[in-house]
Image (tube, rainbow, N blue to C red; front, side, top):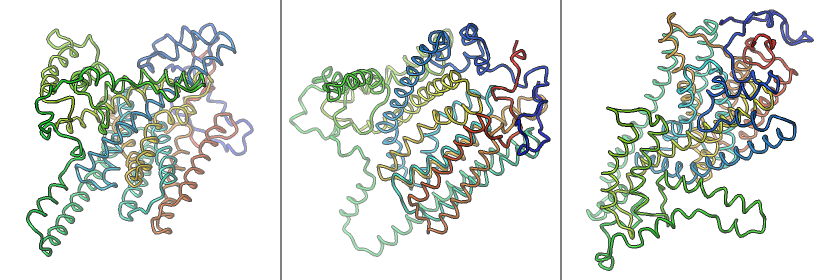
Length: 580
């Protein structure tokens, strides 16, 4: 039964921060969640971990069942389980780092160059969408879930991205920001956060269809403004270029060369199949075909493996299989020495079939035929065409279109990896007997935000700090729209009452206030420093986020009382017999 809790007391004068009537309900406010496992006796935890309640958070591997059925027998085995789960997290984070740095970031950079986007527009659109796609898909996948608070999870992720992540970008590479784009993007996030908070407060968490629709439409209006700005900028550049060309007298040949150079794609420095000299013209197009494939799939780090340290040897061996999987699933943008004709042809079948299988299953059928089999059959002619129109000694001219498969498969790998990270860190939170609010604002947020952080840091390190900064700000707006606006709109539409009930959670209000304070201070900082993003701004943001973490820890251990009044997701709100 969905009841609302109100606290009519002064928390600053209370010795016990919890209001006694919180325990007077006959039933829990929300359905059973996997966090109940911390209140059960040790003998019953394995059985409950295998139940449907805990299995909902599994994707590929059942980490909760694995821990509570294998390592929950005694303290020593628990420490071993903690260490194993931590090692799995490290390997998953490493997969995210490699996928982002070696595949996703180069592809996004090339797309922004081809579309002639400036760093600000590319950051708030393509990079923001790509970096946070795993978060948005996870939110939409669990759109009907009742075990998490979407507002708290989204705002804590936005706080991590907008405050901590943007500060890291500035620290890695300080830069001078463009006043108009800075005020437009940061100002919109400030308005958007306040508007969503108003929608939550005005009807005490009862959001109507019209209100939810307005949350989505506000973001769509912002995207329209961004696109119009890009159009006006391109038009202004074209006008300026045409005036300059009319004033200068240049040869037609020079003009044609300049025009060709501007339209040239980044792969042009590779040898095209049509530029093969007479020395290669009569050679076999499949020369050293298998040797080339095995060379690309040879992923053993021999430098680390040759070290005397056994830890480095084990790490070099642990990386082999994930690297082989990545090279099979993601076509690289910067080929260098990793071109393989056979692998490129196989990827035309492997990538669509694996992605289809990841989102469906072998049981899903069309006219009695599994969907995966249909995709494989349709992709085989494409693979044969790619094999016929390529050579082992030259990169084909059509390979530049593989960048779209790169983005698609990179996004899929990030999605799968992040879902596994979320499941792993939530299992760690359950094993440590922490509340859902605390796990959501710390482990869950850090697990889902690590992709964005590493990707944006790499973008900043490679000389695109403005794009990375814009992505941090733009991802916040997109996250609010996709993780709060879209789920609330869906729930309001399918609801019989035409509205959806949600709450800000016990720390959601605190997160909102901290985020608003940071945005206001950040705007003041930009105006007073002539929009020079120095490391002092990074220190300010990191310090503010550090204070939030301290507050979250203090609230979890009952040292402070959070602003919010809803404690339905905290660990000690119900007596154990309520779950019997």
